[in-house]
Image (cartoon, rainbow, N blue to C red):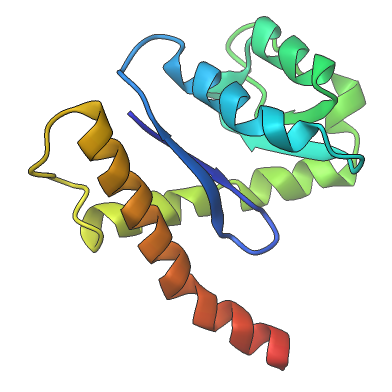
Length: 149
């Protein structure tokens, strides 16, 4: 499974990770990628879909001093409560978090990740990181043009 961490303001991928598929692989990878960034003095938020709405994951984020902007799972009791959802930043994170799907779509259609001809975690990890880097390079001119205007 390929995992990516995106910076919301620019839409650039700041970290990637490849793991064996498993029940908790996404949550473990998310914690591993966000932990080095959580040690900064500025508050950090993590937006994610409802698959990450688990009490242990949300509590772990809060112990790392990361604000969990995770979509609420309405089919069962959600770990995200009113102290998170009442802020305007939560709604903004929920709108912007869909941008990560653009990156995965680009990596599959243009970056060659739909049917890679590589086997093994090290080789696939390199190819996935390389495709993420290429996505950032394609996105960069648009960001620079917006900054110059």
